[in-house]
Length: 326
Image 1 (cartoon, rainbow, N blue to C red):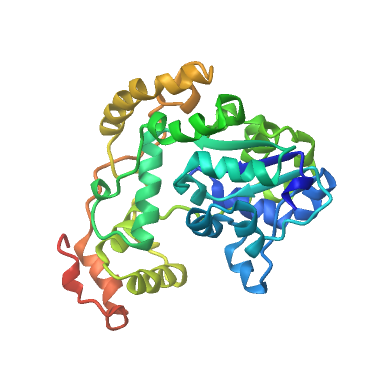
Image 2: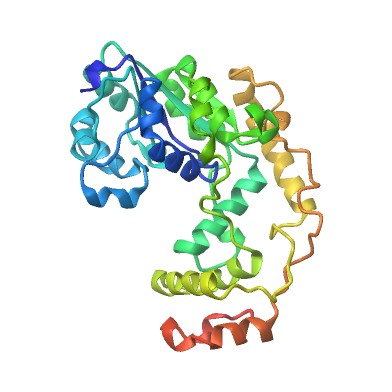
């Protein structure tokens, strides 16, 4: 199976860099990609459609056995006449033994060039996005309780050591540096298939995994159980917090975000130097703080939020006392 490919490209994220959007676009356009000799595997089981093209579920099995081809083939349809195999999943960031992973891949695909692609996002935007996602899933607390490894040097070093710099592609989650301002066009250009984008433009305006507002995120961050969070997310779709006027995007102030970025800029410039990316500040657009013109400190309105919650408090299975800041 893998031995038939001349190129294997693994898209590894990072988190909150449009990965879900790209996966859904690839999944919906498998036929168009195949016309350009790119195979994006679907799941073998009909139930696999729930993953919407996310291949992360295979990583646990890879870490357990390190038999990469056997593990992938159990859940993914790897058979094709294409020259290039494209796999995408943030789970590949959790590969435990990078050298053994590569060795197993090379045994199965001795004639293929194997490349990894990562998108890097500016630090303050990334941590805000991670906080919103964690608040949806499992976090009960403030943005300071949502850590993420922001030293990209350390995060990517094991991949670079195993695969080599020439087979690791770094791209910015920065539309100023994307072809036509499009993430899809940038990705396909980065893997050497820019012409494929013209057949996939119908997907480029989709909003996937859209961020919540600050009041919505705050409410979710007060709930402890995943079941209550899911219930609240469904409720927010049916009954949006339309009367809660809060136009700001971020929980941290522009000054706090600037201090964070300045510290991390110096720590990550080495990676930019190794990959000849130029200034890491320009690569990630770190110095623009006009991105939240309506920013004010977030101050939850006790009366409005409690009224909203009271409408279905009996279904939450959590007392409203779990909202200590209200």
